[in-house]
Length: 117
Length: 112
Image (cartoon, one colour):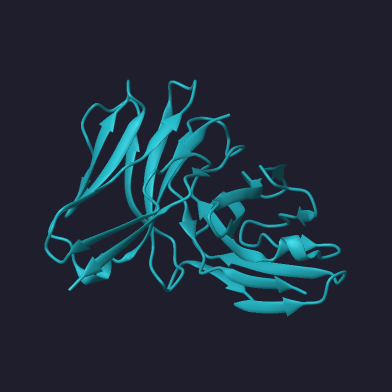
C-alpha cells in the first residue's frame, strides 16, 4: 500500500511571499499520478495541480508549481506571490495509474496554510 | 451549473438509525467515489464505482454500503449508524477511473 506524508501541519507566511509545502510518498508503483488539492474554510475540495509520474517536466498552473523528484519520492508545492485567498488546508494525494479506481486517491493529512496580511 | 450535488449538507442522527447520503452528478462521469474526512487524518476512501452497475470497497468500507443503479447517482447508506461514523463525507467523480476527481461540497454527519 502507498502512503503520503505531509510533515508540516501548519505554515504561516506574509502576503506576497513565496511558500513551499512539502509532500513525500512511498510506493512500489512505477505509474501513478500526484495531486495537490486545496480546501478553504468553505470545505470545498479544489484541484490545484496534477503531475503524471512519467513526465519529467514539473507541472505549473499560474502561481502554483510543483517540484517533482521521482527518485526521492518527493512532490512539493510552491505558491508564488501568495494571496489572502490562498489560506486553506492543502492536501497532497496519490493515485495509482490503471487500477480502475480501486484505490481512489490516497491523501496526506494536510498542511494548514495561513497567509497573513 | 454542472457539478456534484450532495444532500443533506449536514445532519444529526441518533445512533442505530439508518441514513442515506445522496450524491448526484450531471457531468456524465463514469467513476464515482465516497470519502470520509476526519480531523488529522485527511480523506479516506470508503467505496467507489468505476461505472454504472459496479461498485467496490475502499480503505474503510465497514458499516457502509453503496449502489450505482445509473450514471448520475451514487448513494451511501449507513445501515445502523454508530458514533465513530461522525465525519464529513465527500462524494467525488471523474470522467474515467484514473482521471482527476471533482468533489461535492460534503455532508457533515454527527452521530449521537
